[in-house]
Image (cartoon, rainbow, N blue to C red; front, side, top):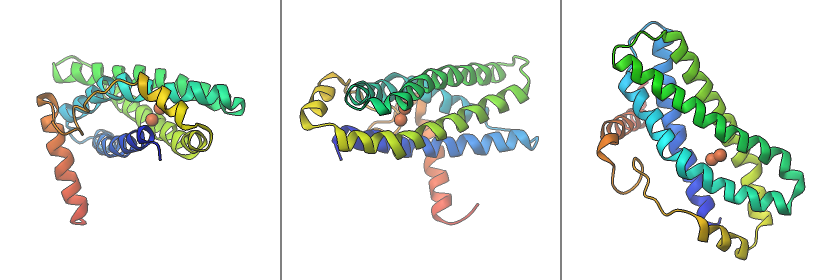
Length: 189
Ligand SMILES: [Fe+2]
Ligand SMILES: [Fe+2]
């Protein structure tokens, strides 16, 4: 697999972990329990600061080349590009709403729940389309020269949460991820 697709695929696995954590908080809200709003904020903050700024633009470089070579992919690519914008808007709305709650603003919890659910659903659908359809098509269609051309345009940025160094602002979320993976490895709920 081309190195860039390998990175994007690993990103997806990381986002799946975050979506599961976000889903757990959404379930608490739905059941009238107290959710961890700081965790929800950290997840939304990460999503708007890293995936929206790097992961999605890097995919769009691939989509541009693939769309030109394989016109039958154009409709799916248009949809994915549109979803990148929707994900950015929904992620930002979630981040702002949760930030409001943390800072004492009166925000209906139903709105946060709906927003979180919409984000989770859209990102899962989106990643499944990329992994199941567009990435395999890119592997079978793009040649080394095209991958090189794309690689020359990408920004080499360290992931602030899943990279070698965890940024201070994401340390708490990182600890939560480790704890939850320990729990699932131990087989507890
Ligand atoms: Fe994407
Ligand atoms: Fe993606």
